[in-house]
Image 1 (cartoon, rainbow, N blue to C red):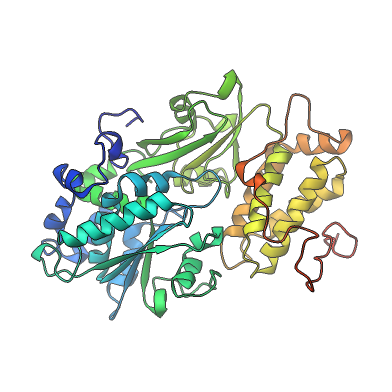
Image 2 (image 1 turned 90 degrees about the vertical axis):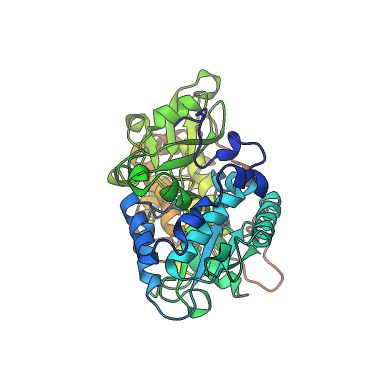
Length: 462
C-alpha cells in the first residue's frame, strides 16, 4: 500500500474529497460497522476480534488494544474512553491530518471502542494549536449525534454513548495519558505515579481507556477487512496499515500510508529521496523521543519488535531524516532543548537531567566542551531511564545515548577543534525559534536562579 495507492484505509480523504462531511463518509460505507457490531456481536467477541487482528496502539507504546480493553470491560460502574490527539512532539503530524480530513472514521472507532469496554462517555482530546482539527471533530460529533450515531440509543441498537471535544492546555506533557486525564479533571497536566494505571483508576478515578487517534481510526478496519484480513496486512508482529510522518532532509515531507514492516529505505524513496542528492546519515524512527538509526538499518523492517531489538523505537511512526551534513552534537542539543523546556518539573531526574544534558551539549557545540562533559552525558543519559513518573525523560535520553554510540567521533572532534566536523552544519529545528517558559537568567522576580549544571558544586560524582 503506497502513498499513491488506489485505496487508502486510513488516509481515505486522498481518494474521496471532503470525506470529513457526514454525507460523503456515509456514502462511502462509513458507520456501516455499527450495524454489524453493536448488538450483533457480543462485547467479549468484539474484543477477541481485535486480539485476532493483533491491533497494537499507534501512540508510542504499542500495547495490544485487546489486552488494554479486557482490563476495563469487566469492572462494574462508569467507564470512559479518551482519544488522544495531543500530538505535540517534534516530527509528529499524522493525527493532525486524520482529525482534519477523516474525523468520522476516528469517531466510528471511538464508538466501537466504547462498545467493547461498556463505556457510555467518550472524549476526543485535541491539541490546542490544531484549530482546524478542533472544528472538524466538533462538526463530526454534532452531525453524528443528529444522525443517531451518538446518544442514548445509537441507530436503534440500545447502545448508549455521549462524546465531547476537549481542547488541550498546550503543553507537550498533556499527551502523556495520566497528565491528559489530570487536565480533563481541571488540574495541572502533571503525570501520575503508576500503578495504578488508567485502566484501573483513570478519569475521576474510574477505569479509562486512552487510545491514540490513529489507533481509533484503525478499529473500524478490523471489521471491514475482517480480523484475519487485518492481521495479514504488513508485519506479523505489528500488522495493519500505518501512517508514517516523514520530515527532515527528504524531498517530499508528509504523511505516507504503508503496511507495517516497510523499510526506512522504501519510505525515503517514497518521500522523493534525500534533499539535494545528499547521502543519508541518520534518522529518528519514532519521533524526537527515540534513538538514532544509521545507514546500516535502512533495510530493517519498521515494526515494534525489530526496532526494539536494536535499541530503537517504532513510537508514533514519526521519522525524522538527517543527511550527511548534519552535526549530530547540534541535533542532540536541539532535541534536548525541547525536552528541557517541556518537562513538567515534577521528577528531579527529568527536571534537572534534561537541563544538564542540554547545557553539556551546548558547551560542546560552542567549542568549550571536554571529555568530562561527554563522560557525564553518557553516565546521566544511561542512569535516568526508569526513574520518573512518565516516559519524557526516557525519550529525551535516547537520542543522546544512540548518538554517543554511533557518532562518538563527532563529539571528540568538537572537543579537539572547537567546532563541527568539516562539511557539517548545526541542525536547527522549528522549536529552536520558540522561547522557553523561563529562559536561563530570566526567572521571575524573587525566584532564585537555577544552579549552573556545569559548576563543580553541581557536577555529577566521579
